Length: 267
Image 1 (cartoon, rainbow, N blue to C red):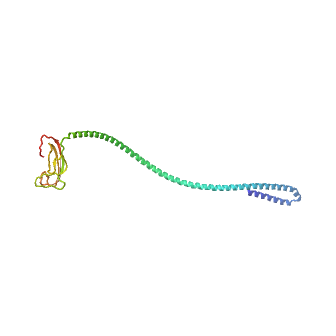
Image 2 (image 1 turned 60 degrees about the vertical axis):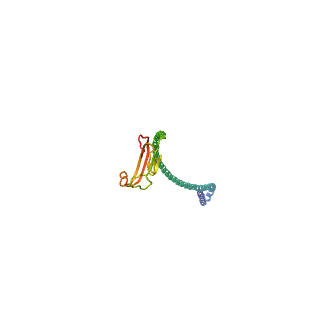
Image 3 (image 1 turned 180 degrees about the horizontal axis):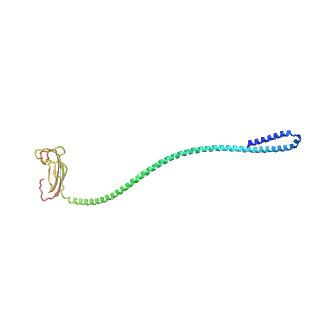
């Protein structure tokens, strides 16, 4: 706008100069007639120049104000650019964090899926345990009933045992269990001999004498004897007692019944 004002002012000054030159060529009579009109125009032009100067001053003030505003806007633009760069940096950081969060979310989702599968497996196993527990409880109840029956039977047997102990308190008790020797081989012999079972394990009632090999029945009754024999001969001792050697032999006996009607004191 200042350039336009200066251009307009120059145009007016040029017109004023060209008009003065044209007036020099006219006659003197005409100059006297037009002189008052020229001064009127000059005063009008002067007033116009003054007014243009005022407008120019106002325009300069506006230009300065605009420059100040431009400076403020430039500073604001720099600040805005700085903030924008900060926001862009924060945006990049947020995007990075978002990608990391998405990765973690995928990992968590995978873990959740695995936990759900494990939970389903555990639920299945829990149902199996519940069925087994139910079966175990049923079996426990059954065993408790059987145990109660056994306890009842045990009480009955205990009562019977106590009764039998009372009945057998005054009766004879006899039993023995003995071995032929501690080790090695016995025999063969050329004549009949009495085998002495000298390794005594049990001798209740002291009816068996390991020194002689004889058993003396303390009372009349029925006795049970059992023999175990090991031989290394070609024939069994029962068939040929002198042709075999004994590597092991055990005898066991115990008292069965008392007060037989017919009984001999011999072995």
